[in-house]
Image (cartoon, rainbow, N blue to C red; front, side, top):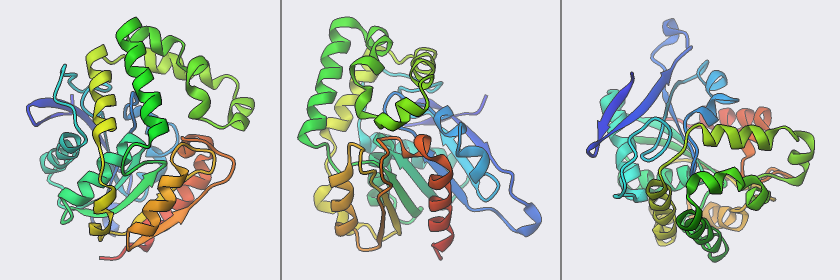
Length: 275
């Protein structure tokens, strides 16, 4: 099984590469999932597409999927260090990084901690800190998990919370998705303390005053119906080499709601990166 040791725990990772070796060594593209996700979220629409152009690395972040799930030790800083260790294990010197939500936070921290490794960064409805409204929602998830357990919270997650994660149009267009997503999460449950630890790591993260230090090219994707629209605009203004795409009428998971357009826009951005 493809595991590597990072900061004292085992992380599950996959490398998918359908590039043409006679055209030269492929660049590396890393996808980072969000809270209570895992690498398979990218397999629906992104892995097969991008692996024709890049060496795609996906991995389950600590506490998620098939990676080890410690009871403590969660922070965005440690998760960014985990990414560095995965790349080191794979002998990859530089990489493009795409991060969604919490994964974008990890990408931001990685950009600040490892600027020599990062080639470019794509932030998908993510934050440089956690706004008050989102802090409240995450605190409610923590309290519900402490009261009912993570499995019970996930059983009713779409009913209780997921209106904020996808647009109303998507729920109408794909009415079968909520039940599938619930099953998908329940089949890959996090222990209560791992979920709470990841939530608290998000709550503590704040690099809003350091965005000007990021020199790598950045694509900020801020969906107009997502949770991070205002923060996305703020990041684009604060990062010197940043572009902005604001897809209309989609929610927090642009890569799921409009995957073809997402893939096209991200590939276009990646191809524009030189050096």
